[in-house]
Length: 556
Image (cartoon, rainbow, N blue to C red; front, side):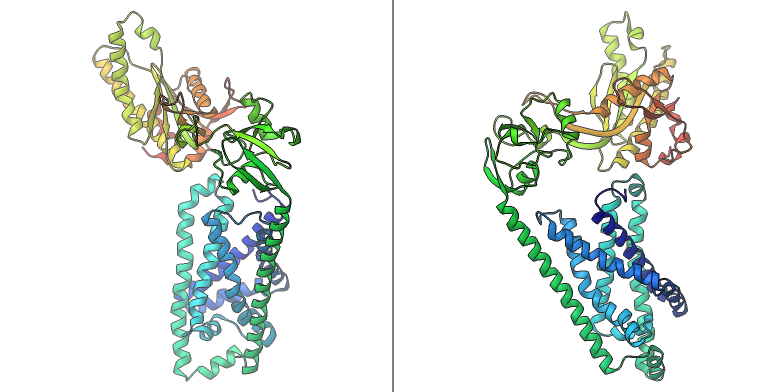
């Protein structure tokens, strides 16, 4: 993942990781003040072996220049300052951090290099203690830490291992700055009391090589100049952004919406971005990734000036058998005037609630089918068939609903269940727990049948996780809520394969990975299922009730 994207993104990630690594060890070093001054000093000396040698210093200085520099560069080149609140907060922290960090660098690294100041922690603490500086430096510590943690999360949030380790990472994210501030407070009180007491003040100042009044004046001048340079860079960034905005407005394009407004938008944006920038309602359930096709438009005028569809757009249009004048708004970049008609509108006769248009989620679903149902019920009265089915469902459905699942639909002698949750991990774990509970419920149900002299019931289940669209599908006013997507078909085919494998349950690797299960030791096999593109890795479970023995992670 590190090497996806352009070189600016890669350079920002690498420089950010360098700075975050430095911050982690710096904060842990501060926290050692809780233990002893000797421990604090020993670790600082070890860190200086890396950061104060020519190579380490060069790497650190380069990262300090590259990371904020590229951030300002990207900010200047943005087409719009509209962004999610979390991104805006991280950006604001990134702008404010250098204003305080430059002061810290001046009185530590610059003072050490220019005036041979011994900038160990006792010197820094004495310099800022009992003054507003200590509060500003504490705020700087928190700002750097929050900014770095947010950047790390934004980078890794789409990986499965990050979601599995997120609770531990949150614990570390809280512990490290708390540890650092506690160490700063403990060591600060100790060293400042010694300094104020006076008997060791001269010796301490000599050991620090305390700067003279002229040296302090020079340091303050350097600090002022560096802050002025940074403020000048901020002004240049704002000017660059404004200039580009003005130039782009001169290169604008006219978009006219049927049943809607006409707007003038910047060239280079996708049609969907143009709609959003001008507050024109435009459905896009997948967020503009070219997957859901709900942003589709009919090009009433200007089709000839558009590039032909390629890649994701071509595949999406082919999947819905789109006419020649239909395009995806998230993929086309108009360079000349267009007249378009949105196919999914929030107004007019096609109006539906957002839920009726569908919402895309990554969820686990379970297909269940009763084996040999037709042969078993052959010759029975319809009443007896219904009675058996209702008894069966009364036994197993609570195992689904008690574990957070809901029945999407009953399919004669089977059912389709969906496990809605705010994360894929919760959904997968709920589905696995439900499958295990169904196994136990079936065992109890079969014991009852045997006691009545009836043959036992056998079932097959397929459990899969992937992208689903949940929405009200049908004619307006008579559209039940249901799920659609390739994931549904794959789960159904897994259930069918369970019969061939003489197993009660087939669990896809996607479910296991999302649930955080260790798959390296499991006997996963690739299954080639009808209607499913490519092989699907899955685990075969003979008896669903034994699932905790195979997957200890889900518990009993």
